[in-house]
Amino acid sequence: MGEWLTLYRFISVWGRMSRRFRVILYIAIIVLALIFARFIYIEVNKSIYKNRVSDYLITEMGYDEDEIAKVEGVYGFKMPKFYATVVFKNEPYVEYLYFAHGSVLQFEYQIIDPQYKNLSQDELKNYDPRF
Image 1 (cartoon, helix red, strand yellow):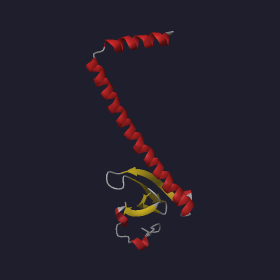
Image 2: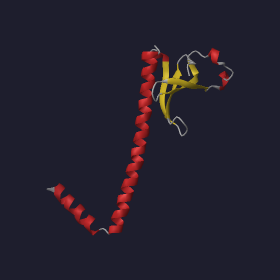
Image 3: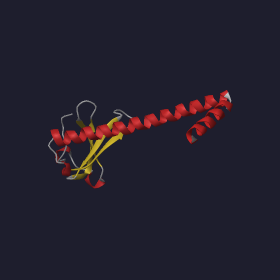
Image 4: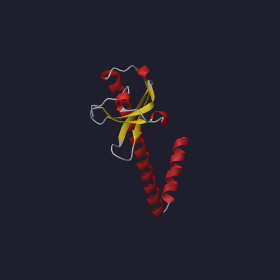
């Protein structure tokens, strides 16, 4: 019985609101829903890219899970919008960037420890120059 009373009170209050206030409330709800949907879209895609790259490294490239220190999905403002970064345990000073829209490709690397800035591509252990 209490639920019906609460619903009745809501409906009676809603009926007494001005039309202008209801329109503003509708617009606010729509804006919040769009913001929330965008957030969910970004987080879901980051997770998808992380999983695609992890699966690729383990199943196709033959890495063990123990060899991978970190895989992270990333949303960027430039192209590509989504990609994944990977840090391997045997090279914790290098971050590899993977593109995973169709097939998974390693498209760049960044040396994140200034001590190793002078490394050449030939010295990188996990560099895959297919791209």
